[in-house]
Image 1 (tube, rainbow, N blue to C red):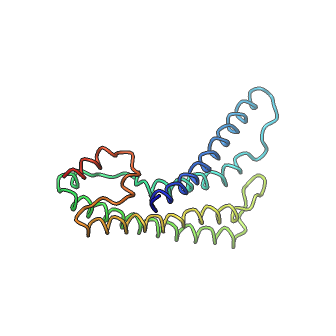
Image 2: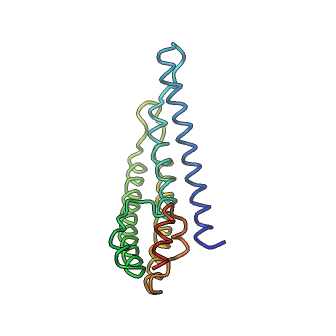
Image 3: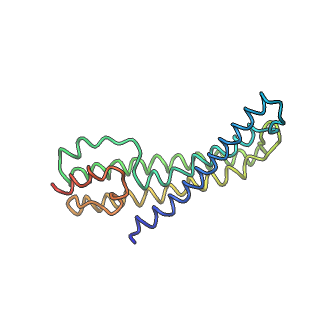
Length: 183
């Protein structure tokens, strides 16, 4: 099993856990909405739970998306220029994405610190936000080494005359990758 496959298994598991949280929230939203019209007891402070769960659910999907490189990408120039140009453009895009996620993680750290120092809580039930945002920030921080791995692999591919890295096989668009390998 390659490093890319091991990382993929870990990041996919994290995304699955996050998605499971999303499904649970959807079921709770359905119950809470139905309870309103069926005169059943509603979930007290329900919006507060969403305020702490949704950022964590969303953040848990980023590492898997970064590793599989499912972000918005335009690969037209890479297909016209051959494997080495493709690898160089992928490396450039990976480095730009790495810088973006490093800055984003830094902002998450600052925001979490503000929540901690300000003693910020949710509006209805007074749930402390900082502990939840520490976990969310930790998940976002995982994005930086994952994206650094992606960038390093594409830089290596560029230096190896466009030979595709193992992580390229994790993508869903394998037919595009096989077309590039054939050139």
